[in-house]
Length: 324
Image 1: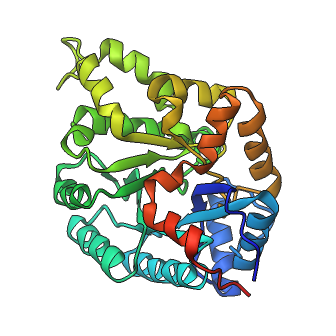
Image 2 (image 1 turned 180 degrees about the vertical axis):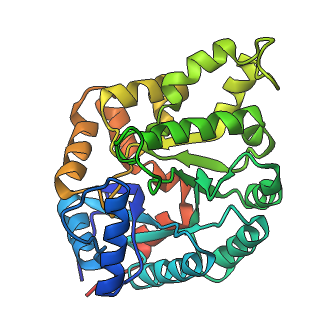
């Protein structure tokens, strides 16, 4: 049994994938190459490698998310993620993926994730097959998640084609996240469902840097369905952002200025094909030493996810690890 780093990092942004055959892995790799993501070889997520990284990085727990592109695969992925948590309840949590292009299926999967799989929260894609999170069709889903007081992790779609010959995960994902946050602000999603804690990946992408502009101009006469500055500020109270690949002053300072340092949660982006041990460690080291946050603030970021997931915190504190 591994000695658990109970005072270690709590990582809200970590990915996993379903086990794949060699042929499936190669086809997935070829799809990434076609999108300008030039990985040198097929990628495969490894539980053993992940546990090793958790131990070496001082990470106590990761919340796993994976949002495949089809309903059948998404449900199978949620099942697999739940099985990982069952085996290692004090090292992992599950953010069950929801297919937001099909509101009825998303609501069904949320119920299944909560009642059958024991999911700690939920994961959605900012733009899933053309369906945006501000769409009115998703109101019944948000109503249910609001009643539960759920945490919803929002990740951009990194599988999009390259922009200007640059792979989407490089920077385009930051703009997609910003578009999503602002659309949800204008449509009053956060105001209508204050019981949901939304956590946006990558320090909220470009959203914090653009919040001042939208606050200034959002209620001008030429803007349809205007957003007064006070309404924008009030809605920010349920928004969190994580530090995945963004634990640097250029991202942390706008996030802290827009939301407050107490709304920043640690995320590593571990398990994504574009994340390496080197980049994950540089990001983690920067959080502690870049001086964008005080030492006390950075220390709280490391563990803040436990405030969002009390049941997982209980597992971390009392459940024995079942790892081999």
